[in-house]
Image (cartoon, rainbow, N blue to C red; front, side):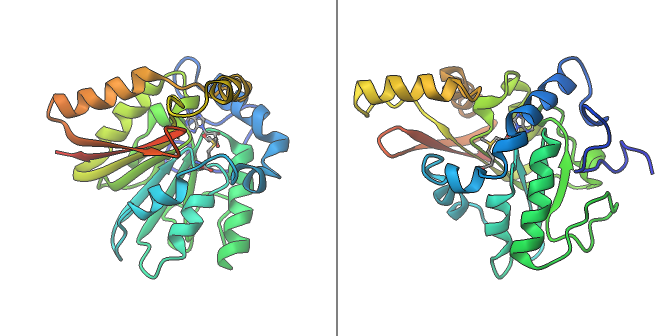
Length: 251
Ligand SMILES: C[S@@+](CC[C@H](N)C(=O)[O-])C[C@H]1O[C@@H](n2cnc3c(N)ncnc32)[C@H](O)[C@@H]1O
C-alpha cells in the first residue's frame, strides 16, 4: 500500500511522511514534532487550564450515526475522544502535522475508549474508533488522506489555526473539504481586549514561545467568507475575549 493511499499516524522516518507535500511542509511538521516531543506527555493535564472554550466548541458539533467530523490539528485527540463518548458520534477523523502527538493520541484513544486504535494504516479504518492521519492542514484532502469520497459534515480547529504560518491555505482547504451546509468551527486565542492590559501583554509574550500568535487577519478572512456569500459566519467571545469561537455554515 502506498503512503499517499493510506497515510500513517506513526513516524515512518526521521522527519516526516509523504503527506507533507510542497515547500515548507516537512519543516513545519518537524518543528511540531520538536515542540511536542516531551510536552505531549503532560499536554492534557497542563492545557486544560488555558485552552478555554474547547468544550463549548464541542457542544456546537452536531454528530449523528452517519455524520463525518474532522478535527484539524487534533493533537492528543482529547476533543475527538469526548465526541467518541457520545451515544451517536458518527465517523470521527483526526489530522495532525506531528507524528509525536499522533502517537500519544493513538495510545490515549485506546486507553480511554477501550477499543483497538490501529497504530498502522489499516486502509478503511473499520475497526478504528477515530481515524488518525499525519499531514498538514493546508494540504487537507478527504480522499487522499482519509479515503473518503464525500466531504465532511463538520471540520473544526481547536487552538491550531494560530500556529499555522500558512493559515489561509488551511482555511481554504477546510472549506473545500466541507459539504455545502456543513459546519466549520474554530476556537482560538483572541485579542484579550477585555482583559487587564498587563495580563494581556504577558499572555501574548508567553504564547509566542509556543509559536502561537493572535492573527487579526484570520478574523478578517472569516468575515470575508461571510461577505462573499460563501458562508454564514458568527463569532462569540470566551472569557472576555481571551478566546473566540467562530462558526461558519458553508452555503
Ligand atoms: C495547541 S495544539 C491543540 C491540540 C488540540 N486541537 C487541542 O485542542 O487540544 C495544536 C496542534 O496543531 C498541530 N498543528 C500545527 N500546525 C499544523 C498544521 N499545519 N497541520 C496540521 N496540524 C498542525 C500541532 O502539531 C498540535 O498537535
